[in-house]
Image (cartoon, rainbow, N blue to C red; front, side, top):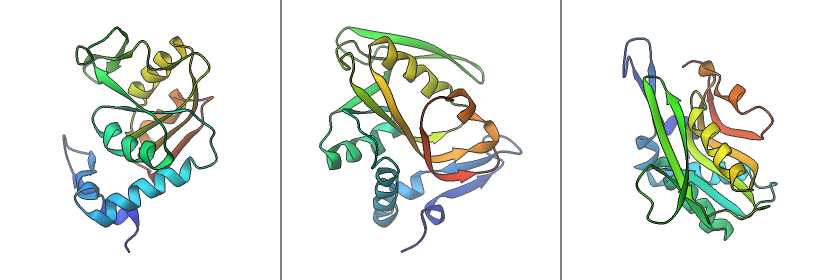
Length: 174
């Protein structure tokens, strides 16, 4: 079997010159790559005690749900504003060009519950920082955060200081 890095397609100068886009779709469309990604992420969190798996749409769903299933834990979706049907709490955060807003059901996390956040990629860390604030606003505790890929050059890990952050693949650049 190949190493997980070999399943990721790197596309130079996308979306703009000087950027190397790390394409996760090539991991997803290969059965061995997908299984290796899920298994590798799950291995990174094996020693964390937690109650819930939480993931942002859409790739956090892709990786978070199988991990939740394998570990027999509930999965909590974090969605873009306006996509959840019941009472929610929301958090606005900054993007490279503008802002975005995410939300979670108000009753998704009970006070004291420990959460592991799963996503495909950490870049600047803004989305996960907003998710952490939502979890803590609801009384939850972030026990760990796990990514398939990390773009170290964007220093997103700095925004998450004080939390356990794991990544399977670490790229030096942006």
